View 1 (cartoon, rainbow, N blue to C red):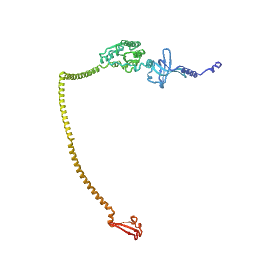
View 2 (view 1 turned 90 degrees about the vertical axis):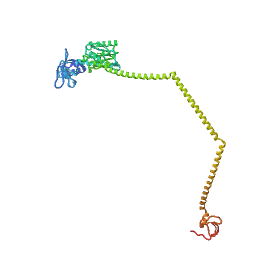
View 3 (view 1 turned 30 degrees about the horizontal axis):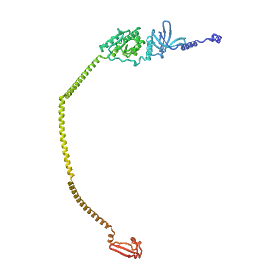
Length: 453
């Protein structure tokens, strides 16, 4: 601090550029991005595509720059006098020292604010579970009475009543009047819903109105109304605006209809379809009744015959027939028994005859005679076969007998002293006594000499 007072003014001075730079830094760091509402004036559209304008209210104004690269959507429609919401950051244009708003987004003031409020409430109620399917109540198939919560002078009530009268005119309708537009509308709609639930005279409620702008439909974006719909013990059908319109009431209701007429078509069936179904069922019922009647007639006829069969007269007839059958069966059984005994007696007589000793002796003699004849025949045959075999063996033996060989002029020579057969000249020497056996007799001799072939 002492150094500051010791410097001269020239030494303490900063340039204008430095000052503007400091101011820019302080403003940009100290003020975050924000929404600003105001009226457009002094709008300029240079060839660069950037937009420059002033944003003012009755007491002040600020310059704004909307650069081309930030522009999204139909910004070409902006004009002087438009009331808008501008989102951006505050900055300083250093060359002139002007502070200005650098715009990033522009929305119409009224609708933009309502849209943000709509999104905020929608997120809040969704987080609390008011839109969950598990809380949705099913609509009755055929309601006994229908409640309509809407303006009694609007087009919606006429559309609903017209459709209900065309589809199912027999169902009564209760109208719970309430304003559907303006500041008082949310409270009146809540009160009408409370009255309908308290009286509990209807099976289903239609809550709705005809089409309009976002501001016109804003009563159906009320938080209290949404919570009253969620707490309703009677199913609620929301039919607000046209098919493209969505309100908080549509999300929290049990069923959303695109239009009031569509809601009327949802809550009641088509009477013509039901009449056709009734006719079909009547035809089926008549056919089933006719079939059932035929079955009952057949059952009655069967029971009548059965009753007739169980009468005393029928019983006596059946028993008389039964006795006659027994007599016939008894006579047949007696005849069968007698025939069986006669057959058995004949068998015993035949068996006794077959067991007689005279018959057995006769049969034995016959078998012995036959056996003797058979034995004599077999012995003669056996002797003949054996004689033939003996003759064959004799001839075979004679063919290989040494005597037959001797008969042809051969002799068997053996040593006279040892009886050893002489097969070679080398077996004897000159002077050895030998014996030769011929066909008829024996010859004693002495070896004079030997010769080998």
